[in-house]
Image (tube, rainbow, N blue to C red):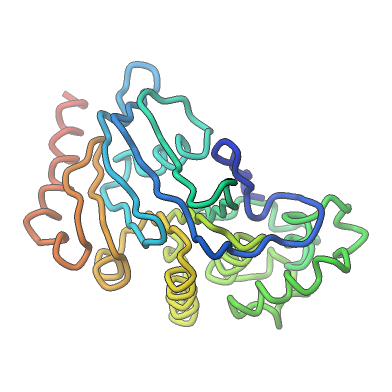
Length: 269
């Protein structure tokens, strides 16, 4: 199963085991996120250098860039999983921090395990052992989340018997419990089929309408142009930042990916 992230300080994390009724999205919406001069290194290698940008509260903000450009590392820094220099601030609109949902790029698990979709969902949201079944208090929220992603009818199937796109939908569902105020998406469209893409787009529209803050790593630049409010081009440092519809020009995209290629050549030399 996928590793669960550490939440930003003071925040709840959607999908974590917890007691009680799922928390709904607050009327005030999600937080603003500020990355201020963020540096991150592994050994002697600089992963991120002087990263500065803002994610607007309640907006859909996409991160684009080449593989190895530091996008997932920035997520890990935000989630408290990687040490960094500089400041990452979450400015919540209310007096208390909200709930953080996280969808990893892929689900890593033993496909031979006799674990159904409901078992997986239960393991993500309750302390009760999976072999005892889903707690009655979580039954309605779990079924609602699976219904939102079109997986309720397959809730009794083994996780190992699902297609890659179906497993990705289940990952989206687990991030909906409790309802998130901030959601982090690491290439959520990578394994989705056409029906799954439609489901994802409906979720994005729902999050935008309810003022959930979305930070979204994506390689499909056409989808980013069409669906995101704002985009940041990241290849170890920020190369561009602006409204998605007008910022992703061919020249900027070429510079984003060619700069990575030139840097790799220098490192090999």
